[in-house]
Image 1: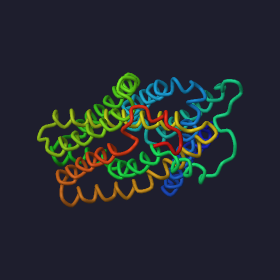
Image 2: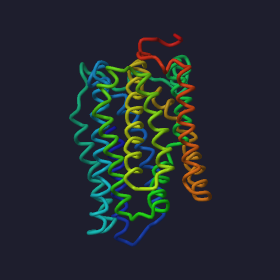
Image 3: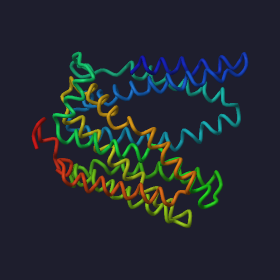
Length: 327
């Protein structure tokens, strides 16, 4: 994780430094690709590290708190970046972003694992991760259903922004408010997930989240005023946040520590592979036919995912109590 932070700091710092000699647009493509790759490696390490730092009994609470900070950053970060870019230029904003990765690397350097444990123990191939996913019914079904969810959701932020701008004729300021409200939904989900998981269990939380998402997307499609749309976006973000924290926490609880990094990599590879195609398809349909029809179709698929999930181990309140190969 430290190496990933240092690498991203160096890559991002190269942009404002190169701009001193004149704009180097080609460099942006290289930096974006490489920082995204290091970002994914960082995320795998972070998911693997959490159970080692807090213990299995506090994984849900820890993930909820981490998701709260992510949501807060999602609200404040773009606002600060826009202000900084507008006042001092985009190159300066990127330089500040590079510095934040340096701060993160410094903070991580003081983190110590209990009893000298490492976030990743042992050497395993990606195939080991896929094998464990396949042998664990609840994770297998989660990976398959989340492939569909990822196909639908990657482009949804763009579609919602399009609906606010083109469908309702609102300004960029209103778009910013709606995006901020979406972050508020994620923060509320992060705050409530530990309580909801404890009282309702995994299945009701995960499946109920996507019922909420499906209904919310339908309301976004049919809404004729900004307030209704904003409330629906809040519900949609709440549902995604609750489902995401629940899913990650379950995976951390079910997977042996020495396999967690590989299983996380395999899990994200499996359910994210088609996401870019989904984003392209959905935004293309919206551009050609408007947002209403495609959004209603997305909402219906969310509900179909829930119906399928009801016939799988996902519906269980405590699937973590079943081992690999258990029904």
